[in-house]
Image (tube, rainbow, N blue to C red; front, side):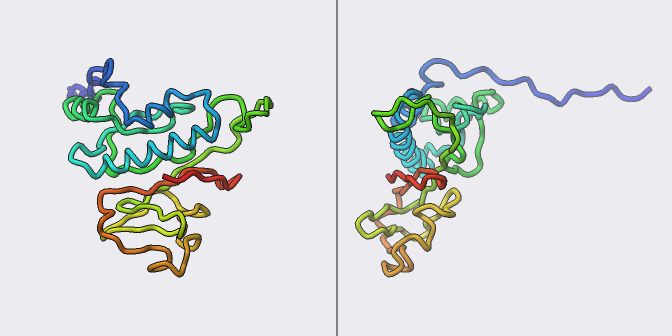
Length: 204
């Protein structure tokens, strides 16, 4: 008789609960809870969120586990803070735990809510334009010079094409084509979020 088939599918681990599940970096939590915020505030919270998550990915706790994507407003995968990271390390098969080999900023995230960011407008809109974020790891943004100050081993995360962080869009006469060497930035992240469709960007 043929050998009995073996089901290799593992049972999902326990669900994450309470404050552990809700534990995100401060601006990530503000973005999550600001579903009805103006678009400008959504961008502002998310770019600060990305800066915090990027910095966490370089810390001892790291960002090995993020919130799972389920489409729509939950499309953003955000870093759990310390309790969530520890829970997921102990329960990696939990459906609340998404393991990522290398942290990346969010991409193609729909704006939420039903109103434009102009306070005087009451025109309802559909989420036609998504937004994405780009982060320069081990860098800070030098706004007045339109350049990045970066430490050794800096890395561009996300797709910078047509964004302010595309190399050609930085001040070419500053440092090495817009990248100024500064090893004091080894624990920092410069991030920008926006949409190539309307070319509106927010920096952190």
